Amino acid sequence: PELFQVAEQGLELGLVPALREMVRDFSRRVGIPINLEVSGLEKRLPLEIEVALFRAIQEGLTNVAKHSRANHACVNLKADATRLEVGVEDNGVGFSVAEVVGASGRRSLGLFGIQERMSLLGGTSQVQSEPGKGTKLTISVPLA
Image (cartoon, rainbow, N blue to C red; front, side, top):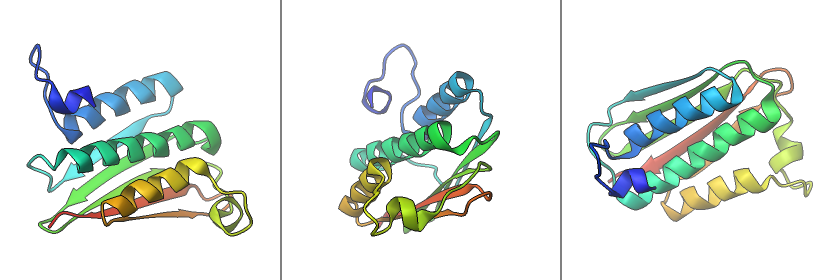
């Protein structure tokens, strides 16, 4: 979060520079190559959106490192005038979404936290996965 607010020693501010730094460090630490792709996001977003998205992406990547056994991951941000779409995707072992986030009671606190953060912004989050087919976390936040 300090990367969002404090301009010291020539730090570049905002969500995209903070994500670049986090993805680079995370990739190095866990040994999984992670691509970061950004399009349509030329200006700063409100701080509460930037921080919530940063934390959600951080949680998504933590799940990749903890559970996926992936050898590659990708973070995509795509914005237009009204919406920001984020994807965190891996090529790992996948899982049964119904068992982990469904009504069976084995709720993932990390995924639940992402869902809560996004709903506070009027946005949504969704997880797509199948055993053996990787996982994709999709986040959508209104910008208007």
